[in-house]
Length: 167
Image 1 (cartoon, helix red, strand yellow):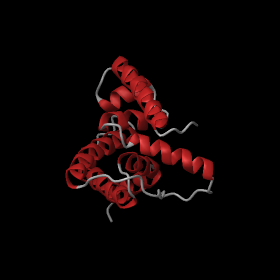
Image 2 (image 1 turned 30 degrees about the vertical axis):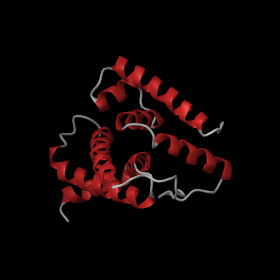
Image 3 (image 1 turned 90 degrees about the vertical axis):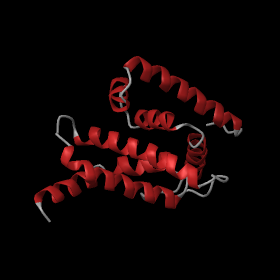
Image 4 (image 1 turned 135 degrees about the horizontal axis):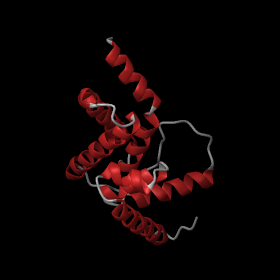
C-alpha cells in the first residue's frame, strides 16, 4: 500500500463512528446500513484526492457521507417499499439496556419518517455540531439551520407522540 492509502485507512478508522451513525440514520435495516456504509467509504475513497485539507477530515467526511446517504436513500426508496420496523442491530457492541433499546427503536422509527435534509439536521445536531457547523455542512445559512433544526425536533416529537411513546 502506498502512504496515501495508509493515511486514508487510518482516517476512516479514526472516524468510523460517523459512518456508522449516518448509516443508521438513513437506513432502516441491517443490510441497508452495511450497504450504505460501504458506499460512503467508496465515495470517500473516490474523492479523497480532492480533499485539500482546508477543513478537518471529519468535516469533509460529514459532507461526503451525508450527500452519499441522501443519494443512496433516493435510489433505495425507488427499489424498496419500507415495511414495519424490524429488529435493530448496531455495528458497535454495547451493553443491553431494554429501556434504552426501546427508546432508540422509537427514535429511529421516527427518524425514518423524516426527509433526507431533516435526517441530516438531526444527525449533525446529535453529533454535537453548532448551528454554524450544521449550516456549513449543509450549505445553508446559520439562521436557516436553526429554524429547520427546531422544526425538525418538533416534528420528531409529534411522530413519537403518534406512537404513544413518551421518553
